[in-house]
Image 1 (cartoon, one colour):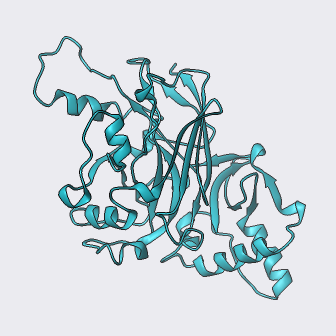
Image 2 (tube, rainbow, N blue to C red):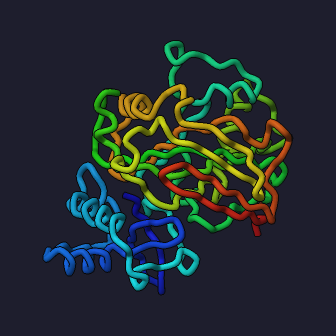
Length: 318
């Protein structure tokens, strides 16, 4: 099952996502009720988590309706073309937006560093401000005025947490997952605030981190795919193209720390809450390797199998 948030006629709606079109949840429930003699009510659109596992009150009914739609010939009157609506970031205002650095050995190596085995290291986790970096599908990445020269892409699988927890074991971690979505962790590779500064030992680290924080630097979407659609998050294909030229082509099987291990690690120090997003790092193929960076007029298409494609044009910041 895949569910999207979207805006249509100035209203926020939820819909089952089918790549080129959505079926509004409320309309799907009405059709299901008519066909099956039930009384399912999907009128509440205030929170997508209501329809997602493991704790959503309507999660089981949503899975039933989604399965019925998948097996039925959907009436065209129920379909809304994605080109006529604005898809939205699936989680409106997550409390926390975590991201990982260096979770694919080939990406570490293309950056000129030596990859380390999982048993000898730990996940590098950082955060982005969610209210200003998260960007809707189809809306632009803004090339920042302060440094427009080396803005790069990073396609990533993102976890959406569905249940509150701390000290979660790796064995139980997937029980806390509401679903998965696509993130493009946009990165400013050459941001050096205050160029006349006196250099300090940790400047390089903070330059790297500050280069992650620009407005619009975390496109996210187009939907949330539930664990019923993705029983194994380590078996997903990742592909990113820049202006229709394939740049990243990998699989989550190559993650140093798999999804469950990432959840375990973060939850040892931070309580995870429903709606938190954890983006799990990017594979090799970023632009820095070839000196190719995002510029105004470019379009990125970031795809993960079983989830969908997140498309983002680029414009100069006004």
